[in-house]
Length: 258
Ligand SMILES: NC(=O)c1ccc[n+]([C@@H]2O[C@H](COP(=O)([O-])OP(=O)(O)OC[C@H]3O[C@@H](n4cnc5c(N)ncnc54)[C@H](O)[C@@H]3O)[C@@H](O)[C@H]2O)c1
Image (tube, rainbow, N blue to C red; front, side, top):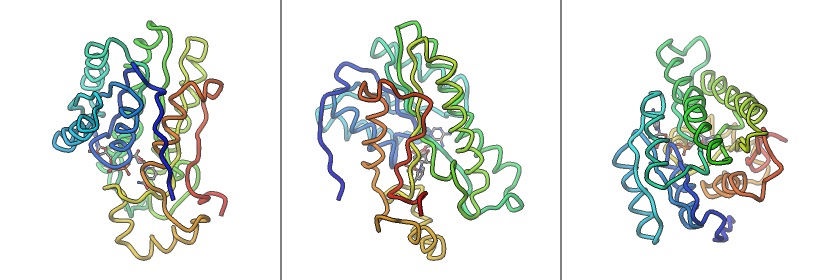
């Protein structure tokens, strides 16, 4: 059973969440807003993004939608500049958007699928950090939280491009933390295990063989929920994790220890 305690750690803070039109990103954006953040909901999916903004506003929160293709350097720069222009600063960047082909080994992955997976899942994190860090440094600091995956730390069957991209996210998180720690930037990642209720995992829950493999690894006997990941993201984005940087926090119900 997941518990959610509403607090006020982000009052007055400007937060960008990419991939916020759906799943984990939507839940995390809502949770930031409930704790007082002014949220830029960034996604390529305009309808889903508008729905997330409407959900936040219906709860009395503050949000705006930024139509953004996270693989496009100009669009990512505009996403960051737009958040700074709208809300005066950028305190938190949550790089969360992704795309990857499922059920593909290296041999089965086309060049086009590989390039798109790396661009959407890894290059997007590079672009977000590249655009956000100068603003954050100029303003005295900021925090970056990247969504990695247990797949970036251990293999699962036939996820080749995804595993490679998420491994890159884990490594890039350390690199950014190392290079900018003295300038007030912390950069950490969260590594979710199997999370239900997102567009990404619909096919997994529909595939009995893959689900059986993953279920066999679930020490706690249940998949996670988006709010389990939001809890970790908000912790890593907040001052409660002030002495943590370069880390990848595993939130997987015990998957990796099994
Ligand atoms: N659901 C899980 O079990 C699970 C497990 C481990 C890691 N994750 C990670 O969590 C994050 C969120 O995944 P989710 O499960 O909520 O998936 P999701 O499919 O519900 O959300 C992904 C979002 O990314 C957006 N997106 C895709 N391409 C984009 C682009 N080019 N530009 C901007 N936005 C784009 C989609 O529109 C969507 O809103 C991802 O990084 C994923 O790898 C999820």
